[in-house]
Image (cartoon, rainbow, N blue to C red):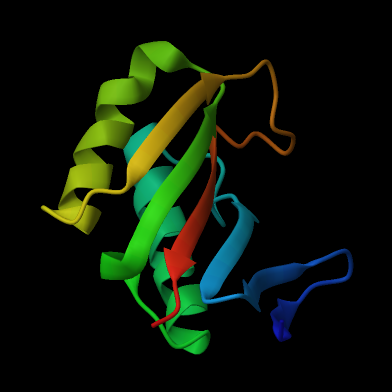
Length: 115
């Protein structure tokens, strides 16, 4: 099995390719003072870039895990999610958490097919 690591940060790689899949690590918004919907849009845009660099795209995302600090604002996230994925919806788990650090309201992890 060939493993390719993309987009290194000081503590991790943003995307890792292995066995036909691209795994994108936890991604938060650049501006954590923005609304839940805007943070979601920013995150999904960043993830689209990571996927492109790894040679795939959002239509190939098969699974997502989402962590949110305020489940009462989930509708904002859902609206941005549907704008981004359209009919190509992956499976998804949304989990309420106490804190994501840095004021982030949401963090998203995705897995996509490479080919």
